[in-house]
Length: 366
Image (cartoon, rainbow, N blue to C red; front, side, top):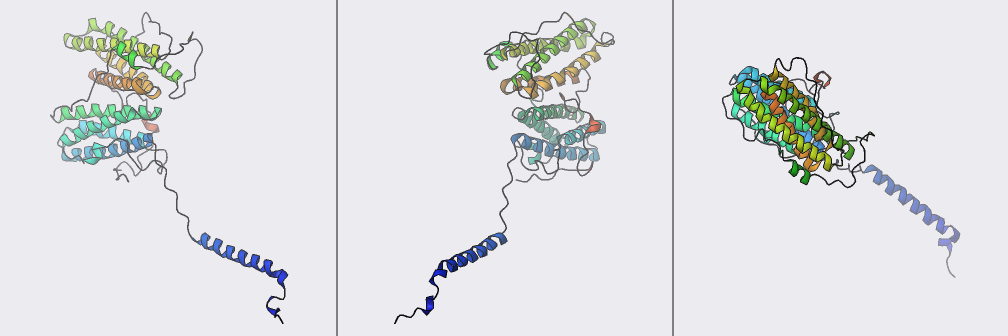
């Protein structure tokens, strides 16, 4: 006889198998739950954020180097203190909104952080190198940050020249290149206009990087250059011989910039900006034309700052060069281009340096 005692309830077999499978599944799930999940890799910062972080690192390192020059007394303290103050303001402006945001990465390779500066000559070279990197990064960064980087780099190049003069050193090479003022070349490099608007009466959207915003920025530059031309023509007969020569040269630069801005504006499908018959100059301009020209140049910086933020490609490269040359002319006439030329800053509203005024740069993680 067959012995069936080992399987007296064959109908329960499927339930037993299911119970065993469920128990195994529970054990496995508990085991997986006990193993910690791997943290996702941090997102790679954008180029703009990397450029901002690199600019902040360089500003802090250069600031520390400048403080070292003050302690050594190798250079006139007034000039060094002004450079340290400039770098402090720039570092405050370059800080990210949150301490955690964009803590890693750098834009272009940073000469200032690669070679720590010690003596006056090294500080001058590092300051000029940082300025050039900032302007180069501004060519690719997002609109608002491009303006900040451009102004930061421009001010650092000017500061390098002042520090070199105070230390009796030659000015760094290439600290003040002038923009190409050839209007025909500007037209050839700008984007062709496909459908020019019939009228400019209706306001257009001015979103960052939008064609309408670029047109408005180029139109504002054209008007600012027309005003500068008018001011120089009014000042020339009243200037001393030593000032008339540079003023005549600067007038030619403004005429070239006005023609180039207008050509770029037309190529961007803008309606030609009418030539105004004249401009109102402030009351003290004719009495003190040198100071008046300085004010005119300084007031033009904001228009070029907008052009840097709102244009792209060749138009932005042109605006970057024009911003720098305008700052150089403003400084030539004794005007202060500001800590970030092209950007109007309320220094009192900037956040304090994280870590206090004695903060120094920390190594940038790789």
